[in-house]
Length: 241
Image (cartoon, rainbow, N blue to C red; front, side, top):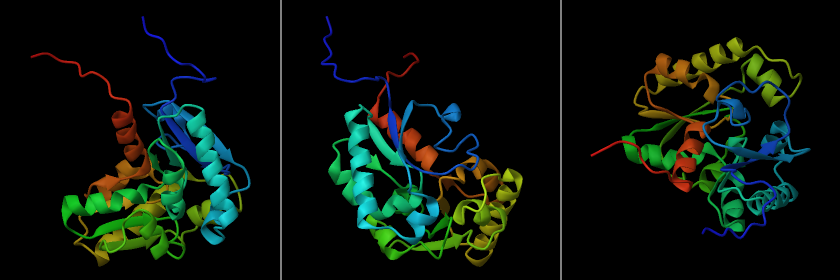
């Protein structure tokens, strides 16, 4: 007989996602598109916290909202917590300290690991190089790691929709082309890059095409979340001896 303590309204949720408010398309591979994810998710909506707000005006009040949202996810029974924007790196330590389940709110937490794997500079493709600060890197333990940063600040489609929130309709093929062009420019000026980390959660849907273009390992939030899911909820291996 197995007796479970109960106390949860919904069961079987693997990953909780702190979700910024945004209404542009989320293609398969995006953390906010559960149709393509190999694990169950629960979203805690952060109404009023948008990408432009997080990048341009992160406040103590915002941090408090994020911590309370993380606690709500934990109370609902998630096994780990992530976020829908890599710039949440600014609050990684405080959120992780506030809950008792693993919290990894930015893909940038992979930067030190990737460097240890390659012993080469890590390429960081970010939504905004202008907004990415030393404080973000320190928040995920990446201070001092040799990186090469390439932003999408000066793109047309990506910046209009995601950075400036001027409209919600988005040309996905154009965003893919802008990403690849930016990455190729980064590789041209720093061919010693050993691997790439995508800071932005809106970029994983294009990661396979990006890898074909730059021929480097590409790490992102969706692959990281899949790894954490596999660690947090272990399953028996199939096979035979």
